[in-house]
Image 1 (cartoon, helix red, strand yellow):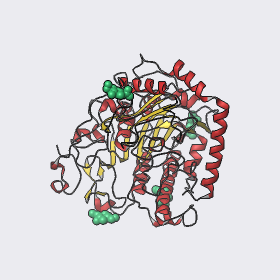
Image 2 (cartoon, rainbow, N blue to C red):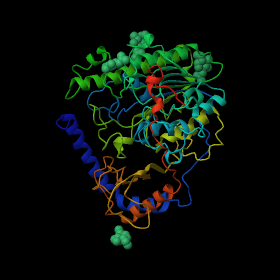
Image 3 (cartoon, helix red, strand yellow):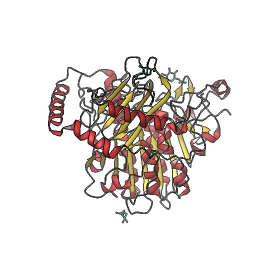
Length: 512
Ligand SMILES: *[C@@H]1O[C@H](CO)[C@@H](O)[C@H](O)[C@H]1NC(C)=O
Ligand SMILES: *[C@@H]1O[C@H](CO)[C@@H](O)[C@H](O)[C@H]1NC(C)=O
Ligand SMILES: *[C@@H]1O[C@H](CO)[C@@H](O)[C@H](O)[C@H]1NC(C)=O
Ligand SMILES: *[C@@H]1O[C@H](CO)[C@@H](O)[C@H](O)[C@H]1NC(C)=O
């Protein structure tokens, strides 16, 4: 990738821009001023349930599209290497692109926070659920689907769940969704729906009829199921539809025609890269078909569509988080800053067609969607999200100044902590405050103890300023320590042999 002329020119441009902003903004002083005067609020426990006004409309339909492992650069409107997503680009360009928006570095934690609004340090859902793990989003955390259902919505999930299924009570149909079609684990073969040789495709709480679905490509199948839901919806009550694609997650598979689209389109092309790009183009087509179905039914002008990836690209496949550092699984920007936008006719005209640099976090969807749907979430004790309706629909400033990206008490490196009497910098963590970001043990390797970056001036995380600003490091470590004290231990991710599909008709199903 480094040889490409586009890359080189963007790099040069970026360097010039960085230099200019360095010289002209006097950022050391300015950032320090902001830091010490505005951002730190030691009495603030970081939990919020702010009330905003948002679009003044009666319970819009909500379409939430989630993609799997789609990196920052793996979408037409950001892509330098040739990904084509004309439908998505049009929607994004008519709506609001969220360009200072963060998820978790891996799948289950992102989805847990998206559905519950609660940070993983309070649910204990710190890592990925693997097949047969006796763990799930704890039942005492309500989901946004349940909240919207209580408020009168018809609620549906098509595609991937990945928040546990060891008992029936953990299934999406018991966690607020009226209907579910899809898989319970984190990924599956895109044509035969197997994970470790056993099937993972469910219709409601039943095993799907594999004779009917085997051979259908996942993105086609999920789009078709979503469209059936829209077509069968009568519009008396509002619709909450989550379409959670398993593309472009591995395995690299797509019907030939989507791969062929890219024969001559990509920079430094390879067959794998063409397949990967084809997977994303197929998602693009699916998004087109789904939004068309909304339009045909006359629902679209009262629908809020949200698009988000669940974490950064892996860095293993021919994908890209360019120009960001890092990838899925780590707390550098490439792992946690992903494509996202909102499309809605309910947005103010001056917001439509713009790019937002306001700070947003995946937990913010919970109170934002609850606000849109007039759902009551007063019982949520540890809400970490903010209601972002005013930011998204009215273009107001984000109420959020801080994100605890990760505090993972399980990932601790050897050696000495960098500072005494504060947060132990050997623990893997990342904290964002304003433009500052502190990372401790980000690579889970001995040599990388601690970094401080100014993300606004240095979005690629090239210039560690921790030696320049030890006082900021110390304050941010103190803040991390404050949050760490509220953290619960990780749930017990233990594999239970009773899960074995051989005992359950060769399907992954609840076993307790
Ligand atoms: C599913 O497809 C994969 C290859 O794509 C194959 O290895 C596996 O045997 C298939 N499983 C079933 C049950 O068809
Ligand atoms: C979109 O709809 C067209 C027309 O029905 C169909 O041929 C195509 O396969 C659909 N694409 C996806 C991704 O579902
Ligand atoms: C949405 O479309 C319907 C049917 O075309 C129309 O009756 C309604 O007034 C429209 N609502 C808005 C907010 O534009
Ligand atoms: C932390 O305390 C230990 C023990 O008193 C001391 O050896 C070490 O140098 C201190 N480290 C720092 C960074 O101050």
